[in-house]
Length: 373
Image (cartoon, rainbow, N blue to C red):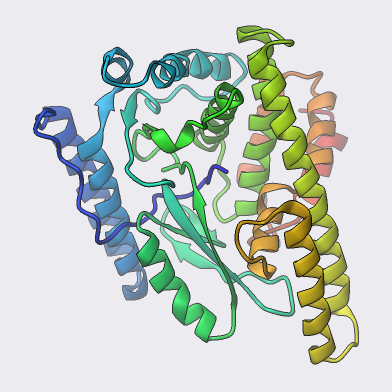
């Protein structure tokens, strides 16, 4: 699953510099841009934030040294034909998104081949008997309920004291992240899946991340991520219909994967509702913990979870899957026009929110009543 994050951090793994790929002037420019952004952010940050931001800068520098142009990547006969064919689709995906109201950017004009299974590892934490996330605040992006790391061991080291302090902690890999337009994001090898659904999944990630560069409400991660998920999911179906046809193998495989994802989402939602009710009850804490363990064990078996689930995992699911019915209703109110839909949502950039993670449906409902103006 792709992650939609501010620039994430990295420490420990050295960049893979290849003798066959000389240091180009544009790479030096990217490194300089990262260093400047890092210096500015450090000046604006508290001491506790500087370590994370410094590692974020190092991670971006590592990416910059690995970058090659998309044209070079497509033309490299040493690269598998399938990868090259998928990379060739990226400009088409971008143009499609721009036709539907997404902001043109310099993103996804380059490619980075990673030597790890995830682009970043995301750490989140939540209270063990209440769905209240731990949050972190940074310049530019505001308050966020997760932090991402380029190195798995760094993520685990960051998670360890949170676990020791009693938080439910989740560490998961993500195939992509966004710098919100501050840097030019590359296509990453981790954005390319192995099955026939790969074209749809790649389009979904590019469209999702392009939404972040189009509309981002500071401090409202649930709104930002749920909106990007909705836009990516819905526009990808239209893109596949146009590009390869509604009955193509690519569209069929993508829709099959989406059906599996929706089944997991339903199971996660049901577990969240049940546990939320349990936590609000007057039952003793020991009873709550026992019931929680039973609910999570059943959930892990039902969805075939690859890692232990806890409150942090469930609350992160909510970050990416909230307000879908209201967003769909707003799109219908806008006559199915994505530019009008996004124009209506831009009113939220000046909206006064009552909390850092306000209910998405409650925020969107007034836009529906206003009639997509």
